[in-house]
Image (cartoon, one colour):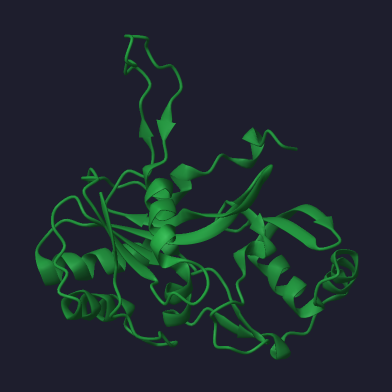
Length: 249
């Protein structure tokens, strides 16, 4: 399997036609997608292009946000954004605000990001409104430009229960089944698998994160080749358990 960082992507700003930028970047780098490829695009540049950018100086925190900010030792303006992006609070202690995001996953600070935004301390990036739709738009542009069926994953980095550090996960998908159910298959010794599910989209995002990085790498787009991703019509919601199935609360 190969991970190809696409270096030709310019700094994205609100209003950019991201699908067109990505097609141009692939051509500039001399990379032509082939069947079975998957393009992993960080949610950060999707958020920028779609205008999911907030100046914290424009936010007026509510009393609830002010109280929660004091409890978590965070900025009231940031907490106000977190509340607006969340459906419930999972944990709120000094230094930690963990919520269930409106998209269904659980993450710190509702996945609101301030790194690599614009260099200021007051700019925050929200998650795209509909990452699956964003992935579909990118995929449509790739199919039109290269006449080849390619999967697209919009990725973010999240922490994990009881584990240090962040890993890449899929928050938007198009053109693939994000979870492959292996129940009924057999292992090396013929033992039937009962409950084995492979989160292909998350694994693609995790692999791509090794190349994309999280600091100053400047590689927000990675082409994954050699895995031969099977086409499908799944959504990112397939990757998350419903709240009623939460085993940690």
